[in-house]
Length: 260
Ligand SMILES: Nc1ncnc2c1ncn2[C@@H]1O[C@H](COP(=O)(O)OP(=O)(O)OP(=O)(O)O)[C@@H](O)[C@H]1O
Ligand SMILES: [Mg+2]
Image (tube, rainbow, N blue to C red; front, side):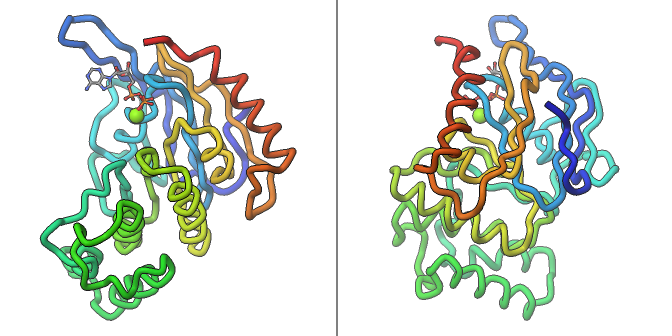
């Protein structure tokens, strides 16, 4: 166990605590002293059973929510709210339905008054990377579910965020589409050595993507273990060592699953 040694911390969470009061006035300790660093240029996966605080922590890093206590830093500076430097990919693709694929991609750069040539080049290269350049004039409803997810990912990347945050973006997809998107996602973020913090409860997805894994446990939400995933890329889900990580993670997480 440790806080990881590769790269410099892009995000540091120091003793973050968050308690929610439910409608029945019962307290739920979503995060109880989270101490973890997320390193620059690494893909860190946040995993753990339902209710362990993955989304709460990610929302705080995004700047959507504030901790009750503790410090949350981006390159040593406190996070005080949302910022385009921290791009978020949501579970629901959330595209603007009235805008074409191209306009969806250019929306963020345009709003920020970014140089048009640079933004155009980036958007074109991202769309061709996911094989969807020929769909640039389509509206979101003219695309399949998997395509919409790919466009949502490249729309976030079109803003050239320093840090990419994703909360279970592939959970709603069928197995084949999910595997394809995991592959595409890795190809995209590895080219730019993007710093990624990715939430999933899917162990296989986590091992496939992660340089490093932060395993959380619930009630109260804590960091249980931090594991560096030492497997060559591209990863083979049928590989023996992949399976060893699968067992390790399964044994770590299963005892913490709370029956609902
Ligand atoms: N807005 C809220 N009001 C009250 N309780 C909340 C709120 N948001 C989260 N919680 C509670 O905080 C705890 C952590 O929730 P969180 O959504 O972060 O878990 P999670 O790990 O993302 O779970 P899942 O895998 O199901 O998405 C849970 O007990 C949840 O019920
Ligand atoms: Mg969640």
